[in-house]
Length: 362
Image (cartoon, rainbow, N blue to C red; front, top):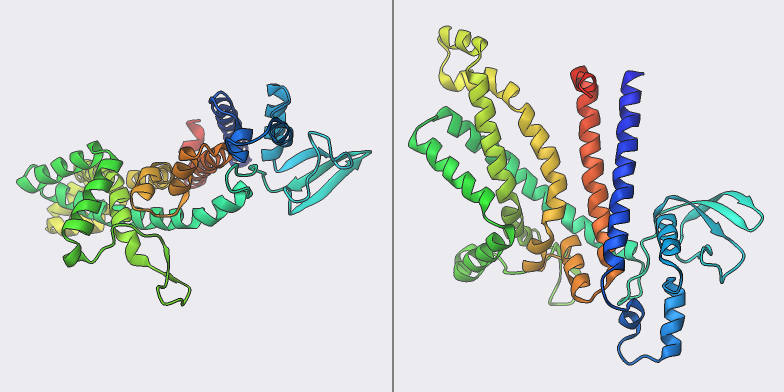
């Protein structure tokens, strides 16, 4: 029962954060100057067409009503008017597919649906379709980056702790500090120029490219995994540096405990002490960090994807910003926020189940 109460509290907390993010996104993008109707039709549009588009987008209604409809569109369970096609809350079958009706009272209907993220101003496509097409590429990029950060960061952290207070330790600490301090977009430009342009004849790495490429001979799309190497290394540098320092500090703390002294007194070598006795206990803070960094990567991937033309969520959002395609930007920000919140909540719940002390500290 205690676990269920803890999970319920975390879920309610996550829902409140999501509501806050959705509200903040709505406020920010509704005070940006510019006319979405003119963005949709172009500059050479007549007043009648502009008025029709504003009515279709709901921009002719009071701001509070637009906000209520925005939340209603985002909610998986929402209320709509099923009969009046001119109603502001009309249930558009094209926008809300698939859905099922839960309850009907007169002309009001309660439906279960996928969140509706509106239509793109420029492409006239559902934003959810565009995000679902771009999201897998971003997840693949983040996955490769976190794998790199995990293995290399843990390895370097063990090496730094093993060679504590030597030139090896100091050199690794200096490199990790640089990795944390350097902005991701600067590292992306530097790596693209160095490894794809200057050393391109040696590395054979492309300057730009996405997860799938089109064959020049008309054989359709093919999986181009080599395109992920430079973006993944660039994206993984900062978490790698953090993981390395966490692993080093955690391992040094464990190595100072009494049972490690006992293991050394038994004649075990330093490598045996670290690998057999200290490593497992030192990994706990590292695992916590990696779970949060995976979610953070989805937010930090924006400029890296754009620089390497990796057609994922970041590339989609930057292009939408350049075109003032606000529904795409709003939808992308919301999806990234949802992923970040869900990953962190699942991590908290997992630790609460495994360690009762976490629940008691709440």
